Every structure is written in structure tokens, then in C-alpha cells.
Image (tube, rainbow, N blue to C red):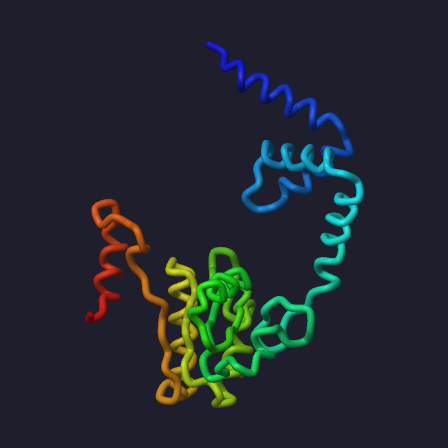
Amino acid sequence: MFNIKKIISCILLFVMRSIRPVQKVIDAFEALPGVGPKTAARLAYYLLNVPQDRLSKFGQALENLKKDTKLCKLCFNVGEEDFCPVCQDEGRSKSQVCVVENSLDLLAFERSEAIKGVYHVLGGVISPLAGIGPNDLRIPQLLARVKTGEIKELILATNPNMEGEATAMYIAEKIKEMGFAKDIVITRIGRGLPTGADVEYADGQTLLRAMESRREL
């Protein structure tokens, strides 16, 4: 039996794709991570119905996105000046550095208000399969910051997956090789059950991490 809704959806998608200006916008949206053909088409047609002045402002904002932003010279966060707002904040402890994979992770920690220090954005993780090594990231710049002697605690906040763990271990080992292990407290973010989760539905690895990260009450 034919799925009428699916057939109609395919026909509409074909018609939408047959209009060249719209197709260009659809292709642009489809190139974004996590955006499929249907979502891209919906976004394109939504913009088609937006008033021209709003659309012009949207286009101008996209055009100026890279022009109006800079990478912080110290932590490589995204900002508008040579140094990002976090690094410029005199109230932040420069001795505590939280190492994250990207600026989105930094924003997540800032929303939590958990970090009272500053950051270092690596720009990714070590991934041999993807051809990404330590020197392709901002690990040398982090080690240069360690050499200044200003850092007293380094929080390794890469994601708790294979690449994130490997990156954290690599950084910790390099600091030990440099002879700074006694001068710096190197910590790793806790892992385990998220707030609101049920133990019965957790996988074995998650429960293991939760037990390893347990603390005294």
C-alpha cells in the first residue's frame, strides 16, 4: 500500500528543488551539520516569506560573522577584540584554566557558572582516524601557558568519549614530561549518571564511571 503522505512530501520537495534561487538556499542549509533535506527546505521557504528588511539584516549578520569576530590571542575563544571578555575579566582567577574542545563547550560552562577561572579552547580533539594530531590543535599553545608558571589548576573538560579521553591523557602526560606535574593540580571533569536519570536504564560503563566518581557526603 502506498504511503500518500510520503509521496506528497517527495513531490513537494521536488517542486521546491526545481526553483533555482530557492535551491541554492536549500543547498546552503543542507551543508550545515545536522540539517537534512526536509529541514533545509522548510528553512528556505520560511526565509522566503520573511519581510525583506529582516532578511537583509539576517544576510548582513551572516556576511559579517567572520569579519566582526576574532579568536582570543590567549585562550582562542571567539570574541570581538584581541582578548575575549573572559580573559579581560579582572575578577577571574588566571591560575585556574579549564581546557575545552570548542567555544560552544566554553559557553556551556559559562552558563553553569561553575568555572571561576579562565579557559583554553583546543579547537577539537586528537583523532588519528580523521588525521588530527596534537599539533593540529592548540595543545602547543596550552603547554606554552603552562610554562609561564601562572597556572595552578588545569581542568581537562574534553568530552568523555574515546577521542576526548585520549586528548586529556595526552595533555596530562606532556605536562608530566615537562616536569610541571608537582606544580599543577590536573583534574578531569566527573562522569556518570546525569541529574534526573534512572539507574535501571543506565548502561554498565556509565554506572562504572558513576561509582568511580562517587564522593563522601
